[in-house]
Amino acid sequence: MTKKTTKPKEPQAGLLGVGLDNTDGHKRITQGDKFAIVGGSSETHEKMTETVLKTFEELKTRGKHLEAVEPQELAEIIHKSSPR
Image 1 (cartoon, rainbow, N blue to C red):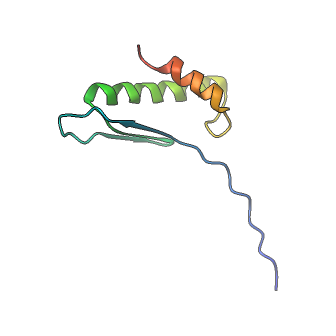
Image 2 (image 1 turned 120 degrees about the vertical axis):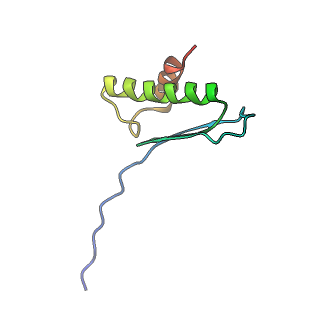
Image 3 (image 1 turned 30 degrees about the vertical axis):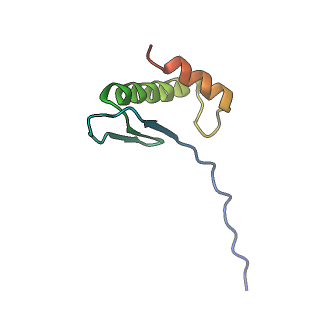
């Protein structure tokens, strides 16, 4: 009997945005390769989407992947990417 070798699993990461201020009953869902945004008012959902897209652009500029970035650095990038 041979022993089956398995490759170690690659780390996985993703971002999840949840908006809780929806009052119009509309179900908003936006998904991407490593993120999902659900709920929120139109304005909130739009801001979360913009933040996530800018966050991934900044990660790309820095040459980093979501799985490898430190939580503190990710928090700084998200804060910087948030629309004012």
